[in-house]
Length: 128
Image 1 (cartoon, rainbow, N blue to C red):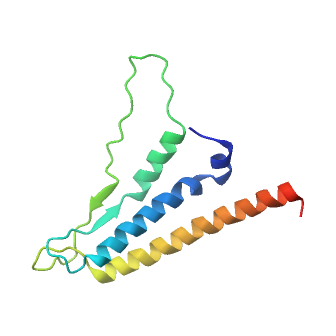
Image 2 (image 1 turned 45 degrees about the vertical axis):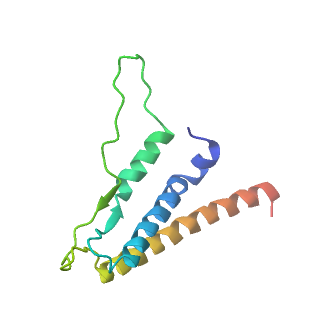
């Protein structure tokens, strides 16, 4: 269900929680870098964002016989390691730190955009 606030914030309103979820997965990978048989996980951000957008504006059906669209795209997946360790752990700390840094930058960009939109709204309301 879409509302005027989510329309005003655009894609960043849906992207922010997904970016947070990805950062949590990457942090979990880093914290399990020495755990035997741990498989590095990541979020298919594009598929998750498309799914969130689809939930915001679902397709309309004109008959109960119409098929519903199933979201078959996995959002969280196990990332293959570049060079898995002998104990089966696929976490590469350097790759995870780089991915976390980029995810943090993207999170901050979405947050800055939302902050800018809220300031614009406050300016329109207060006139200052």
